[in-house]
Structure formats: structure tokens, C-alpha cells
Image 1 (cartoon, rainbow, N blue to C red):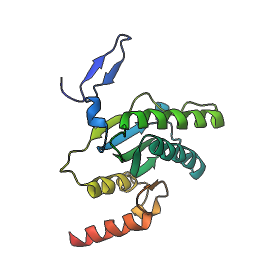
Image 2: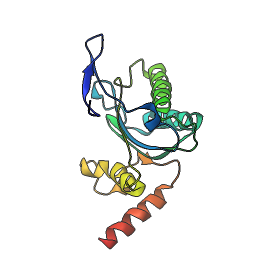
Image 3: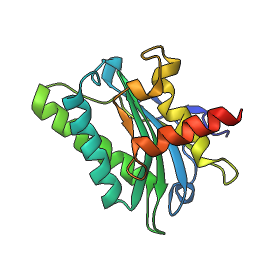
Image 4: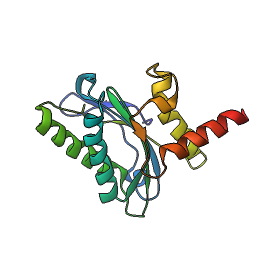
Length: 176
């Protein structure tokens, strides 16, 4: 069966087929998108984003991962996550991050935060990390939310400062 094919489980609901767990473990890099429940525009203010981002960073540390880039769009989040040890587990990271952030959000608002599941892609060795970071932080620009990447406040990295990412983006743009 091809990756990405949907199959019905015993409850009649479909879910994406995941790769073998070994693809998500260790030093792998994974791109993920998680959507808010009913695509509610939850991530429109700094306090909402901050609470969730904090839980994602804590889950990353717990699971031996590092968030190389993130961007909170109004109704979803994009992440690039890398394992920092042989024991890192991307799937456990996502489960823990969504669980903890969902609980915190629910306690504050009384509302559900996440849709079930998430979309992911294990990056191939030949795929450049800077290209994926560029893709992630440029999402608000492509969506027409801002005129420049630097205007959007809800993206960042646990590894790189915003200034480092903006510098890289401007250097790369000038070479084209």
C-alpha cells in the first residue's frame, strides 16, 4: 500500500497510513502539519500561540527532538522536527505535544484544540533543511497574511534565532 493512502479502521473512520516506526526514530527529520479542531482560527494572538509553542518545545526536549522551525497559522501549525539522539521518537513527540497543548488550551478555554491525527513527511537525506525552513516560515506570506516574512510574529525555531533565519532568507534571495 502506498504511503498516504487512507484505510478504514474498525470504526469506519479512515486514517493515513504511517511508515514503519523506524522511519520516525533516531536522527530523522520530519515535517508535520497539525490542524485545529474544525479549523478554528485559534492562533491569532500571542498568548494562544505562546501556550501551545511552550508545550511543543517541552515535548521535544522530553522525546529527544528539536524543533528546527515552526509556523503557527490561524488554524494549523507547520513543524520541522529533528531527532537529537538515537532514542528520539517523532511520533511520541507529536502525541505528547498535541496532548499537552490540547489539555492546556482546554483548561483555559473549555474548547478542544486539535483535529485527530496530523499530516507528516519524513524528509529524505538529500532534502535540504534550509529549504524546508524557508517553506515553513514563508507560509504567512504565501497565504497573504503579511507582505514580508519578518512581519509575521508566530514563527520561529528552537535552534535558530529569527534574525539568523531572516538573514539566511535574504542571502539566498539575493543569489537567485
